[in-house]
Length: 171
Image (cartoon, rainbow, N blue to C red; front, top):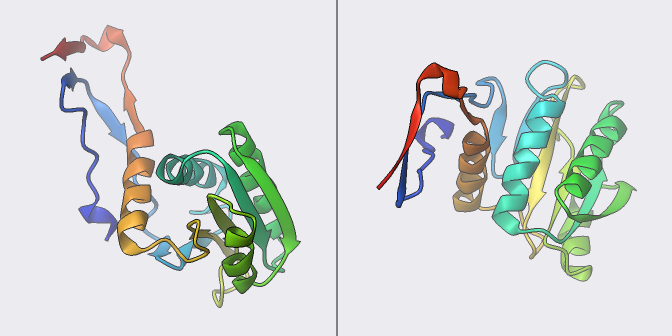
């Protein structure tokens, strides 16, 4: 469960700050087979961008295979994914419109770090999502998914300005 994921600060530095901890929208559907939500409501470009940050932190920079289903908003979301992966220093093979099992084969064939398919499976048409694959072509297991969600949450911890009277304290 997302509520069990915790962000752990560095062991050799205590930072005393106020944080804004943006959580994943509670309405998202989260499982090892993907993270899905209603496009434009709880599944938007900002959510995609930050999930990809966590994903690349988890698997490392490198080559990723990207594909999507036939939903009307999939091409737009595929472009968001491709743009963000490139911004994060990765290479992308965009396979276009493909069924999910294609990534099970394509990721190891191209020796990619991982793969992402833009799909919401059987959910209604207003939904879409991201299905994350590791280098073996399998979905991220629960441990890796939890780590990705931890990295997502860590990305959303923001410092307030120095004018707020907050300070960094070294141990």
